[in-house]
Length: 617
Image (cartoon, rainbow, N blue to C red; front, side, top):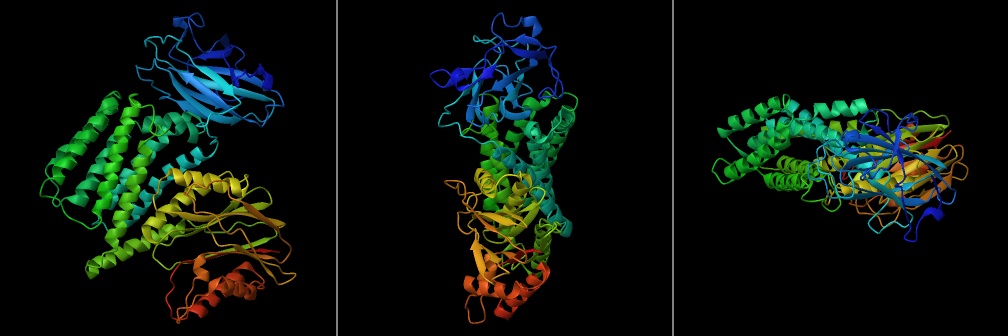
């Protein structure tokens, strides 16, 4: 079939209801453009009466259709719409673009139609649509057929918003966040084995990472073998997540532990072991186990064994939010709710709420002045390890690129600072720089930096800085981090030019070797997570031999001397002019740090100071 503007009806739609090539069963690589489907039979995908005899439908099958696109539709944004009573994964040119239902085990009551849409662009003249469709055998046939209907619309509805990249970034961040938190709490436990809540919470976060990986395996894992391994390895993880969550609660709120903990742990281990022999036990077993935990917590909170600790309110509130999201997820799984605010993976927000609540609890606990000296030393050691983990997120070595001399340094003012920088290749002759500052200090800002690190790692560096920054903003807003914010600049630098997009960061300074002048580029914008009204503006400038670019956090300009007077941005610019003529980027940073130390004298440093210098040579 050839698609053109003329094929759309008056409502701006065209149904792709003609015959597709059909292959029964399942198999790897069927979504690939290179897969040979020449022996597949032609079948209309609606699978209405007469399209395919009941004996020929095995419960799962693949449908493929090659489509030619005329020039008037190429590069135009279209709405790809799907309606089906079963479950489906839709691929465009081998890339997953849409999923409805539980793609591997559709529930019995799936006769009602489910609908979804995805925004796509058909760049080029030839494309492949592939659909993996599930409708279990033995399930009553829906009146309209047991198959699906796929259509295109050239006038997207108001609720059909193009999100081609940022869901992958969000999902990558959602997996990376519990992993980083697990590493953080394992580090804290290693330096203070008495704080066992860190161990239990780290194990809980690791199990959550495995659960989310299984949920998003179709997007994040490239091969069918990897997806199958992730599914088998994580079937019983919900039980273990509940178990480790219970142990975390016992350690935080009870002294000594109630006698019921043995029965609760034994029940979890029995359910976990039995599920490996009969996976059907998990269909309802984990739900019963979770509600048993809720009953246990309510019982203990009303009793007299509770230990009052500073900051546990944050943990309890976040746990309550997590419990609500799990209940909503159960309602979505059973089809009582189609989604919650358009989101089917509701429990993911519960994981984020739990992570923030636990981190705020630790921040409050570590900040209490009433803890005696030995306890204070222990907490100082824990924060030192958290700082080391925070600093380990920064690149150990700067990349080497002909014509660019790069150096970086950070001088934190607190144990765990909020400054962040990173760099990665953006093509053969350019680099993508990230330079940011999380609001506040301590563990909470460390969590935001962790999320920013995960987002930066998941970006496609070939896009422009403005587009990449807009993707980060949508992803950070989707995490619902409340008052936690991340200011960030993204810049693409080569030996010839620099292009910058900024989200509430100070401007970059460019020293012109030929004239000795300083230029400012890339200031302004709103912090990430505030849902920018439009893509951030980009600013570009040419670079010449000897020019020097400075990324500097606001801690430099906000340095105060003994008289309480700040250095200011004019003072920072003047200091950079004095230092920029050093022969190497490393020497420029050494001179800048010396300028900062000389200016503040004995006055304490109030904020982190971070420099990244790029010299064109």
